[in-house]
Image 1 (cartoon, rainbow, N blue to C red):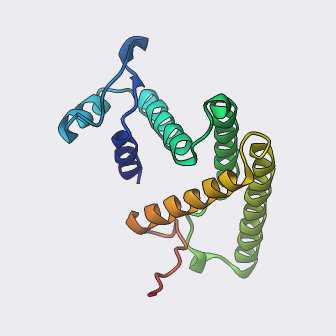
Image 2 (image 1 turned 45 degrees about the vertical axis):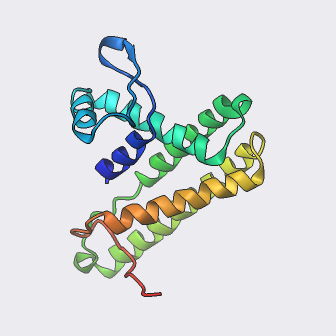
Length: 173
């Protein structure tokens, strides 16, 4: 999943903070895949994470056509939102086999999943309100819509193994 996302972000062609704190701008669009892979492989895990975050942010800013005067404030809110969503999701361990749970354990796990789902929804509402102070409601809606489409695309390509996913079966149109 990370490789697919990373490849998508690289295509957008933004600069990165490279080795030893030096800022080096790469023209990702003009690089062939082998060159891109080499540059990425030479980055530390933290640098890769930061690069991915930068690409994601730039993609969102470009997709939503955020006014340059609002970019900094929006990016800060968007990153806070994502960090909070990630923190909330970490409260639920989905790597379990439901068939090995007792009725009580299954009920507790189900209840926990509802509670985490509600926290995610509450966080989304909270940040939708905050984002509307910076960008129009239509762009907030577009953000959440594109977020859902990206998640669906990633789930289509992600191999589902073990019990860590309760994927919905594909439905034919």
